[in-house]
Image 1 (cartoon, rainbow, N blue to C red):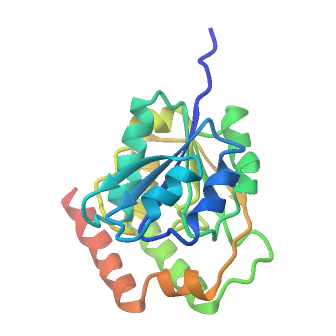
Image 2 (image 1 turned 90 degrees about the vertical axis):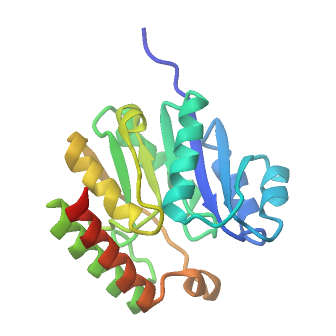
Length: 226
């Protein structure tokens, strides 16, 4: 008997009251449930997300993107998710790309799908291209797996990955950790070109050079400790 499909979108959010509502409404068109993890937000993220139709969980303090994502994944599992979509709260990902991201999972050809912002003619600032390239190189060095856009938060986890994923890193380095999970569990992967929208807002929220270096050092250190 075929397992009933239950698609849950997980959106980690930190002070995204001004941006998150349209993301939730668009994701709701493709997911059975949208689950927002307000990661120690001090603005109205929780109430705005709830009013937009999301189930909302809250961290008392800011724990980091990786911790918020794993909180959402664990909650989605407890809600019987068979497929989990993760995407950012700030609107840089287009939820209308979700059907294309879901397709390899629904066709049974992949266990996890990575968005690839560099697979289309997106206007990506040079500094983001540099950060992503460095992230890809570090990820490859640590895991032995090349992913074209390893640092993107837009992913789809199929049933096997939903059961097995276990994120332990709390910050941005969790994206590299997921690639390591791919290698550890031997998940089949697909990479799908997606749109991306950068604005002054999303650029200001991104990793600074200093934070990027700190993240890289954490990844390298923890790769030897795990």
